[in-house]
Length: 637
Ligand code: F3S
Image (cartoon, rainbow, N blue to C red; front, top):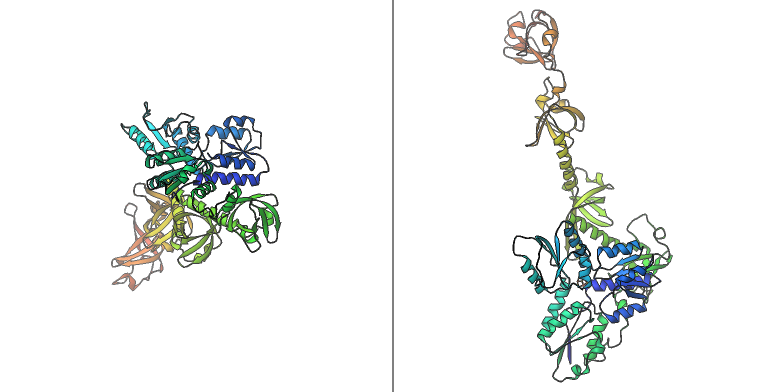
């Protein structure tokens, strides 16, 4: 007899995780542990768990629990109120809800709170569906295939029981999709289910008989049976090998038997069944496998387990991990933090989570690592930060070609040089040892490597934009504000005013003559400036220094009365005369005819730039800002 196992069969991720949680809890607690309902729909497993002090209870039994009792929530999950009542009674909760189911709870709760009506495609009496309904105050419309749907709200959020058939989902979607409804549909059917259903369907078309292994209460096993029956009339539904009738094995017309199993069927039940039907009775697994043996096989490299520290010495910590061999957590595998010691972190009796890095060392211990767990957690955090676009803090470790290497909980992250600041950085070594916030801009898992790239600039840019926004709102023409000189060009200086770049044009630097901004300003200097113009639309800010100084032409006629003699500096020549600076911003003209008693061809014949000369005021016109001087009247030139 040829026995063929379906490509996908048995424990799904969520069920396996829940059973593992239960087994680890059995190691951790030296007392009775309760599960809210059977941990899985498989009587054999439930019986084995009882031997480990793990007992199923009903919802009504919560009333009788005492504070500090331990309750495991199985993979189906429960409603919000159940969590509340457990917490109110101070019960210790081990939440083994399948993460895919938790995801449904989150969605249902979110959209229910936003006013959406909730539709669940599934079986109203299934514990998973009841749990989901508990996240929308039990208001969900529950339908199997949409046939019974009558009053459908205008805004609906549809989810499915994870083990529901895709056909039913499609039917419900078709039914609600007419009209102008606001529909949010989340196909939450778990691929574990569809994969098992497809593998069972394919196999059942090619065999003479089909055996479906699963708990009688398991809805996904019942569905497998239904699918296989449609393809193969010799399909039987059994809980374990003991229920497989001999006739099917002895029937000469049956040469090939297919086997599939529901998501709550453990591997050892599948192997027993295969062994019973197979010709090869001496197969290695042809023996009653104990449940603990199955657990033993879970001590695989890479698995995360928990254990109790039984002793600590200079080599590391020794743990009881509920396995035939104890675990060793070597000192170098304790933490990535350089200053923390094993003895400071843990003590005997502590329960800790660790990752298996070797099933057996030369002394027979299972070698464990907390460092690898930390690293894994760090990767997960980085990935989450990447997906949610949230910043994380990293410490810069070294400057390398083209950037710096930073570290987040021991994970190396590259920050390109152009992403360190908003401007070009000359010396990257200045950043080594600094802790800065960055945003992950690339997280790529390529084979065994993960490429992680971060940017500080993007955060600085956002900060700047935020502060800019506030500054634009506050800025008003005529204000006097403080700003930092950031850059200089021949035509002016750029001043940072609370994140906004303002231009201080060279003509606005002084009433006097200034050739270039660096004549009076320094980079980094904080100065007071006058807001000349705020152009919010084009994001242009014009500033002035000049406006903060009194106009030297004000009261010029009083300061420089006609016939008075002044001392000034020769600042420039023209063909028609020389300009004499009386004070910064007030240049007066000595016409060429007023420079010397002698005939001169040009002012430079008798004067020099920079020379201080006395002159008599012969004319003052405030409106045109012109003052006429005579040098020759007070000098013997
Ligand atoms: Fe979870 Fe899918 Fe199994 S939802 S419990 S992994 S069938």
